[in-house]
Length: 354
Image (cartoon, rainbow, N blue to C red; front, top):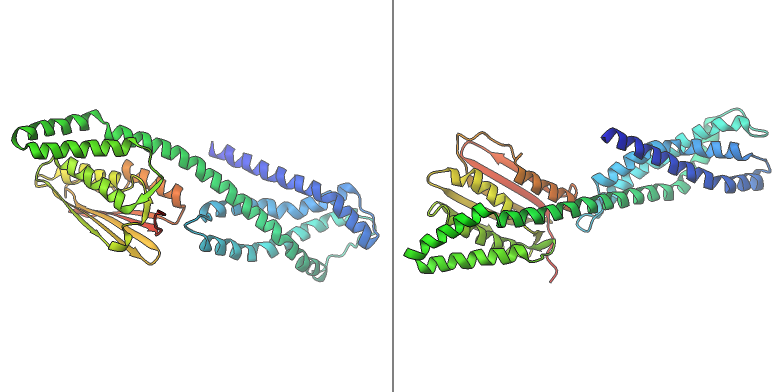
C-alpha cells in the first residue's frame, strides 16, 4: 500500500512539472525569437524545458518531506523557515545547474545550434537563472507546507474524534463506574461527608468530559481535572495513593492539550501504584525552561514487572497527539528502572489567551 502511494505521488509530481513545462513553452519560444532571432520549434522548446525540470521532479518529494518534518506552525516559525532557507541556498543553484545541463541535450535539434558545451556557457546563464528560480523553490516549499498542513489537519481531526470517543468511553466505563459507586455506597455508612465528596467529584468529572472543550486548555485546568480523577481513583485503593504537585507559579496558565495528563496518570496507576500492596506516590512537576514547558510524572512500579520502554497504548496515543499538534517540536520520553517510572514531556511554551 505504501509502495503504491509513493508511485502515485511520483506520477503526480511528474505530471505537475510536465504541465508547467507546457505552460512555459510558448513564452520561451517568443523570448528566444525576440532576443536571439533564432527560431525554435515547439517540441524542441518543450523538451528543453522538460529536461530543465527533471532535477526539480527528483527533488520535489524531498522538499515535501522537509515540509512534513519541519512544518511552519504558530508554535514554531523561525526554525523551520531557517531550515528551508538553508536548504534552498544549496538546492537552487545545484538544481539550476543540473537542469541547464540536461536542457542542453535538446540543443542539437535547434536551428544554428552551437554544439560545444563549455563551463562558461553553462555557469553564466546558471548564475542568472538561479535568481529567477528562487520563486520556484519558494512555491514548491509552500505547496509542501500546505500539503503537510492538510495532512496534519486530517490526522488531527481523526485523532481528536477518536480521543474524544475513547475519553468518553473511559470515563463512562461500566466497570470503573460500578467500583466507584460501590465504594461510595460503602463510604455512605461510615463517612457520609466523604461519600458526598466522592459523588461531587464523580459528577464534576462527568460534566467535564461530556461538555465540549477547546483543543488547548490552561495547565491549571488540566491539573484540576487530574486532581479530581486521582481523588476519585483513590477511593478504589484507599490509603494507597499520595499526590504531590510541584508546579512553578509562572506555568499555571501554560497551554497544554486537553486530556493530556489523565491517560499518563492512568497508565501510572494501572501499571504501577495499584500493583503495589503499599501503594505509592504520584508526583507531577511542571516548569518553564526558556521557551519550553517541561512536565514530568513520577511513580513507583513493581520491580518484578518487565520494563515496557514506553510502548503502551496510552503513551503511544499521547505521542501521536503531540506529533499531530506540534510536529517535531514536542517530545515524550519514558524512563523505567527497577523501582520507579518516569514520563517526561517537553512542549513549546505558550499561554492560553483569555
